[in-house]
Length: 151
Image (tube, rainbow, N blue to C red):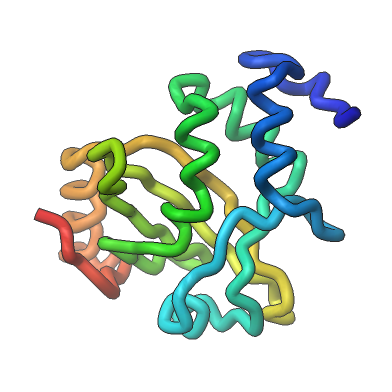
């Protein structure tokens, strides 16, 4: 049984069991999806497999209690698509409009220096206002928008 004592918002229950059953445990965390070849090149990553560590998962659960088990179980589908991509320093931010629930999701990825690891560092719901803020940062040259297929 997994130790998730750091998770304040949910505790260990059938919710987490569903996550652990769906996503394969790797050496550094859980494999939650595969990104496109294009996105892996942007990140300078040698892998397309996205991993979330236990530490990041715990932090994400605590910071975004509005996310449900259904949201987390969509991670592989969400990470596999991107309708909006922006490069912000060493991280790449992607936003997806999920067709199943018509929800906008924001996720951030970071590759290790060697390019052998690719980590999901943040996952949350988002909205048009947040996307417009990123677009504004692009105009101010604070981020670089690589793809924008959102209204």
